[in-house]
Image (tube, rainbow, N blue to C red; front, side):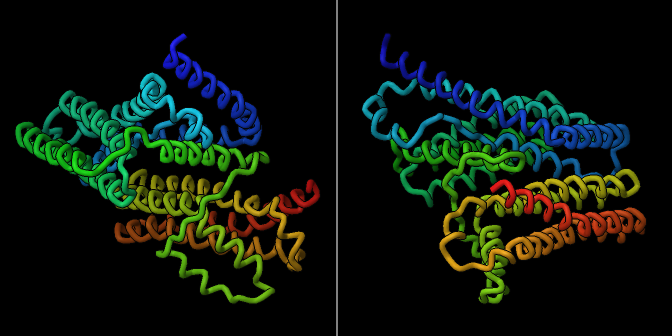
Length: 415
């Protein structure tokens, strides 16, 4: 058997091992009620979508929705290689024979991403065709396929770049160019959009030839695989205890200043600890992204007064629930830390101080989401959905600490 064939076998073996490793956690997730929540989310979304395409409002932002949705799915190009830290030593001598191994990774990820892009495109197409539809559905489908291929190629070139700053800059440029091209095809005539696309793609290709590149970016691929595995385990950790993985810390200076609002005293030890963990860990980044996306989508639904204003309220509760699920995982961040038993910390205050951080974070996120629904609805003269949602949200915020306290006490008993 050739060395390249052996590496392909190694890829299949590692992919199978990860599936077998993750399968039990999916069973635990199924027992938690999360699938029921997702089923409710899908059914509610389907009802709202059907009502929308039956009667698209005249002021519905068809182009803006298309640019946002298609840019996200066309630009997102992950790459699972199953590489681990030791491969930088043991597989690097076989770098010239890694083409078959990487081809399997590209095929695996391209199929999954393309299916997601196809679903989003097909969901958007009926909305697009009820608007001006300047270039028709087939032209839009062709350019979507082309842009997906270009983004997969561009993402791989970015991974190979030597300098992280240049890689981030060109990634941002790739997303901006994709959004501009989609905007051109949604709003301009065929020949104008085609000329604009050729011009931007030519500029894009020239820029990607300039930076120096690795032949195979081992460390970057290993880091990306580690981050992907960690995201899986962070998600599984919401339902069952999972193996501890190294945590990644982000400074986030745009929000880190909030830590200065916490008084640096012994009675605020766990308030400071959990606030810092929330602001600096990957969980905080996920909540920030959910908050930003939720505010944007809620605003669109509220501005269009979809379903007499209750469409935005439905989206409000969906994103409120997603943020609540993410925030619940904060209680596991320091559950197995040794230093809690080494330093003289006020352990009895931990639960109450955690609940204080959770309560404040949930209140801030809920208030922001609610404002992006209430203000546009108020400008349209619709008030009842906002009042109903505010009452239900306050009821949930009042009940949540009691439920979390029971879970924290149960966690302590298990430890």
